[in-house]
Image (cartoon, rainbow over all chains, first blue to last red; front, side, top):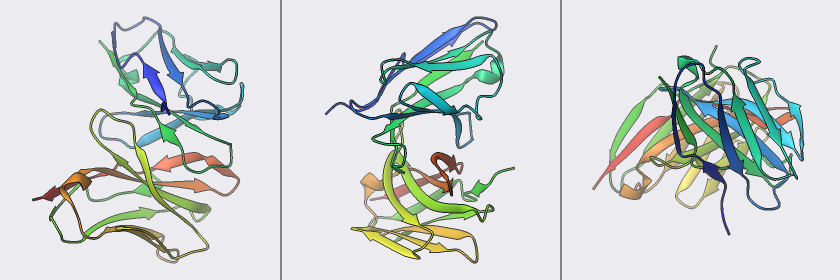
Length: 114
Length: 113
């Protein structure tokens, strides 16, 4: 079956612009996660969805970051007024249920803010 | 403050030999540990995990050892194969928050033919 897909694979934007990153989880997976990996760093947790609600947004770095999930499926991560420090690979993952420790990751979106 | 540390950025081993990847953690509330493997331009893929109630878990060529008193875990790959060349991430989750993984920075393993 299809894995987690993300689009776009690469995004180059100018400082101050807004960007939207999309994640399509594995069909039937109720839990969805966003992480980011900055250069030379490990993956950093951003937000977690169970269904359409986000019980834990604690990893979002600032109020410029927001995410939503609709229909218990697709999720969009939005970064407003992008800054150069937002440059990173943004990874989405999904799991069948909240309690599953094994998360299946997408290939990521590489965001470059000039 | 990094709670999961992989102090070796890279490791090079000969095909057929053992690869040992190490990971240290600082938070004693972590109760579940995972290893992920990542190839370039792909997302991480789950490899093996271990609960804090165990000290060893084995899956084929891969074995994870957990030393809770030392807050240390290691991944052993025997025998190593060139296809194992990838970045390996150690991750941990907290009691009651098992959805939130805390990752180390990764170790690049190169297995030479």
